[in-house]
Length: 270
Image 1 (cartoon, rainbow, N blue to C red):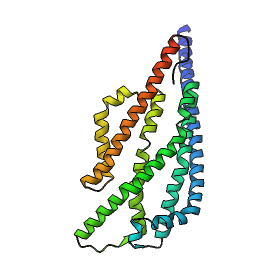
Image 2: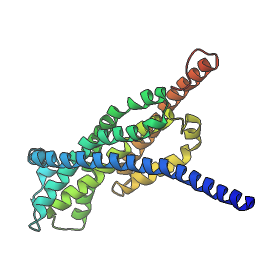
Image 3: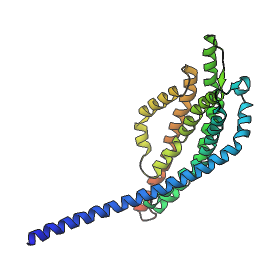
Image 4: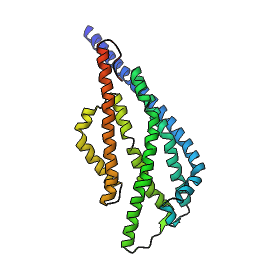
């Protein structure tokens, strides 16, 4: 009888432990769901705002090279709407990006110490700055090269060039958005270093792999010519090296704080 009671107690204890482990997981999932809903709401507002300013932005884009040198056409009744939606989505992405980064910080905040919360929150505004820097580089440097290369190939093949409005903006944004997101690499590395997930020593060991990935990405998002590849791969590699440099700066500050904490003068961390 006592043995049965003991087994029953163990079963109840195991069930209790499982419930205790399940509750935090459900709470985290609920918190994540709430953050995602916030992001979707802001993205929707951004799309609405994007649609209101799509026309002025479209006029400006069409006044710039290479759009001002070609004639764009609509091949279906939905092409105009598709163009507006693409422009609105990019505007919404710009608006939503820093808010998304803040929601990510708010989600991990309960698991961070006070000094970690302070050190990671300051990276939120730079998400927009780096994205805009990448957007400018992609639009003013990479996109003209890619577009010029495609026109050169068409000319060599004696093709009559007829461009659709949707195809033009799809081609443009397929270059702009990936490069803009890649410009977030230094910020991501700094954020992970502040959380002590990565450090400059590990990043230096991964340098060869990182260079290979950068080269592969650069080749995929540029026309297949050496000049365009180099103009994209070199900045991406420089971004990685900047990431290593900034990670080293944060890492040294962490070591200094840890040394002070060991001597009883400060709390550990950044």
